[in-house]
Amino acid sequence: MQEYTAVITGATHGIGKAVAHTFATEGAHVVAAGRDADALSALVDELDATAGDVTTQRADVRDEFDVEFLMETAARVNGNIDLVVANAGVYHGAPGETPLTHESYAAFDDHLRTNARGVFSTIREALPHLADDARILVTSGSVAREYTPGYGSYAISKATAEALVFGFAAELDHPVGIVDPGAVETDLAGSGRAPETVAPMFYWAATECPAEAVDGKIVGLGDWKRATR
Image 1 (cartoon, one colour):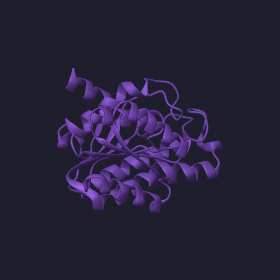
Image 2: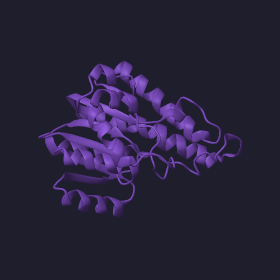
Image 3: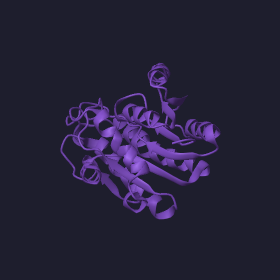
Image 4: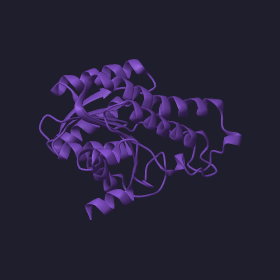
């Protein structure tokens, strides 16, 4: 993957961290973003140990100026951006224990600002820097489509993020798609598969899955397993 630049938001924990490791191992130059500067430094140490190329940039996806600078930084690495993984997200409360009927306005606002508006800013600010064959992937899950009681505005924010994907896919020449890795064990979602077991799914969606199967689509765990078995 010579001169391949992959921007990953929310790269210091969970799925984002595992995806950063996967792309670095495959030879991409990873531009990792997150809000925790110490966690970003630790990620550099980890990727350096595996000979991965990485640039880190502290960025809060709630701040479009942070994201603008992130994308400008990423574009300077090889001249453009080949992949954007919009993965940054928050969940205020315990998974399954945040019903809408008891949710605070602060939690509602921050879920939408981070998980939905953050996707908008990530895609919007990447556009001037995308390579001709670049792809954009957004991490999501079934909670966005099959509402389960107790997931409150987190589920609503993920549904909004998916609607943004469909909107951008309809308007852009670049493939924009949703990656749904199923239940993954993270601080946000709780129990599930280890993040490193599903990270290769993102690499497949970015490089091997046909563009038409990604653009405006939901790429699920079953799609990946059927294609790679």
